[in-house]
Structures are given as structure tokens and as C-alpha cells.
Length: 61
Image 1 (cartoon, helix red, strand yellow):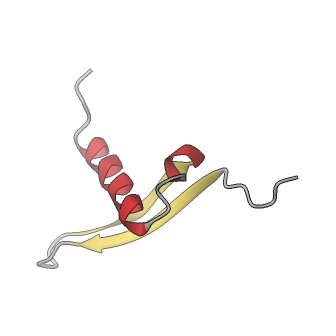
Image 2 (image 1 turned 180 degrees about the horizontal axis):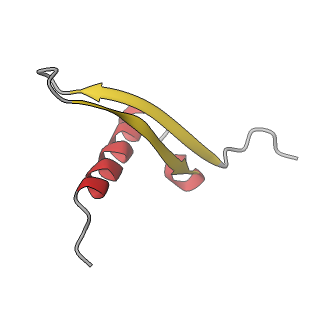
Image 3 (image 1 turned 60 degrees about the horizontal axis):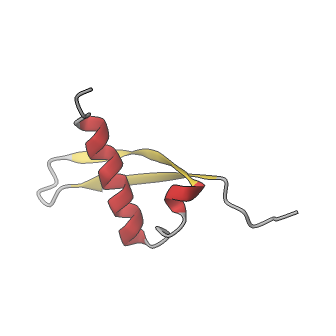
């Protein structure tokens, strides 16, 4: 039995722009594969940024 295995991760976050006029908050579910190799805050931030942009600007099908 492996007790230290991450199966999924919910990352709760909040942020605002430099002027303080735009606030965002929420959570982003990550799979094990998305989390592995992205444990550093800077890497998680980039994963979150990509997921948010993809949600707000979906690619045309």
C-alpha cells in the first residue's frame, strides 16, 4: 500500500491585477500527471494561467 500517492489535487487560489481593479478566485482540479513536475508555485501558476485562458477563450471546434 502506498500512502503518499497523490491521485488528484484541488488548488484553491485568489489573485488580483496590479491596479486592484480585477479580482479572480476559484479552484482548479489537477490530475496526478498535471501536478507531477509542476509542484513549484511558479509552475503551478503557469498551469493555472493556461487552464484559465483556455476556459475563457475556448478554441473553435
